[in-house]
Image (cartoon, rainbow, N blue to C red; front, side, top):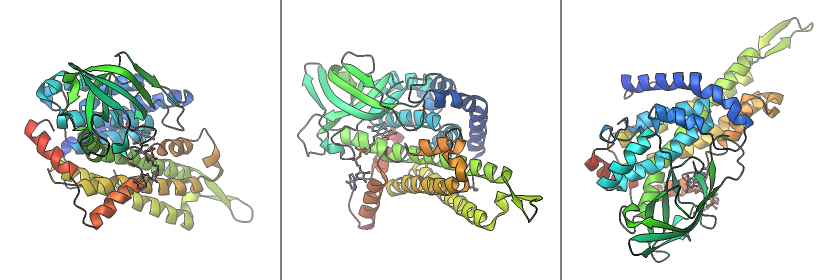
Length: 408
Ligand SMILES: Cc1cc2nc3c(=O)[nH]c(=O)nc-3n(C[C@H](O)[C@H](O)[C@H](O)COP(=O)(O)OP(=O)(O)OC[C@H]3O[C@@H](n4cnc5c(N)ncnc54)[C@H](O)[C@@H]3O)c2cc1C
């Protein structure tokens, strides 16, 4: 944490202390093994995080979860990401569909799935397709009703946690193209016939999987429809705006904090020789130009963290905050990228060494930009806000529905 917040409670602070302890003692020792494994599905780290019930952080205690707020979730994701981008990636990706179940799930669905998720059933949200990407309504995947089942055919790509998930929240077309209510959301169990998962190589976050999920004639019982027919866009957008944006902002924040920490360590230990006879040395951090760069990094970090915490706090207070959540994602991604460029410059030749910690952060940060919408999509949303466009406020609807169920 880089600043003081009047709304952070002792419970938040205790949670942060526990997360940092877990990060130091448990997550950090796994990193060299996960890095050496390249793109792969790590099963050990998710198991250990599940033991702490982190995947149930926003699930109410009545469903076996931790019953905590979105600020607590933000703290857990950013602390996990500080120690390992993959750990943060795994945690945040599963919490997005969890929010959609809290938002749209029937009482029976909540009672069936939420206790399992809280105990370590990892989940995905499968929206993106190769030919539609950011344009969610343009997707081709379909579900057709056949008696008491739906038959799903779809090609989903870039699906976070595809390697470890026991449950996919799949959004596909059930109506005419162009109609905002033409999409529906389904809870699809990962071991059902017709599901094939493959994992393309990723540049970073080794241990986290973000792969293709192919669904061929998958028979889904009608009871696994989430919400009503036509609620698919609401499931995708709410999950993305209310949970995805702050989750990815928290991932960027944790990586950003680590970029700062690695840079301070480097500058505080690397010494340069001085004077004609090179008898004196001084730390690189004593150089005024280096200090300016450090000041810029610190300033960005403080701004990015405050924007995220304030946005998530608004959500916890039941205040409509779509624009604030969008801005938190944009600013955190941009700020972490800018600080990484400064850090890379300050590390000199060491920024080119594959075994240096800063280069792992360079690889990991590349996986934060696109999920929950690339920066240009956030800009689009903010320009609509500036121009006064009358858009659905997903946070308002999420607050209304989840408050009624008293789960968050
Ligand atoms: C690590 C990672 C994890 C992910 N996790 C998930 C997941 O769990 N579930 C899931 O469903 N998806 C996931 N995604 C996919 C992610 O949501 C998409 O990559 C994202 O929506 C962008 O889609 P695209 O990559 O097809 O890019 P495109 O939509 O093709 O966009 C490419 C670029 O074109 C420009 N552009 C496109 N449309 C517009 C527009 N309307 N206005 C302005 N500019 C535009 C932007 O510059 C944009 O960056 C993940 C992606 C990554 C990399």
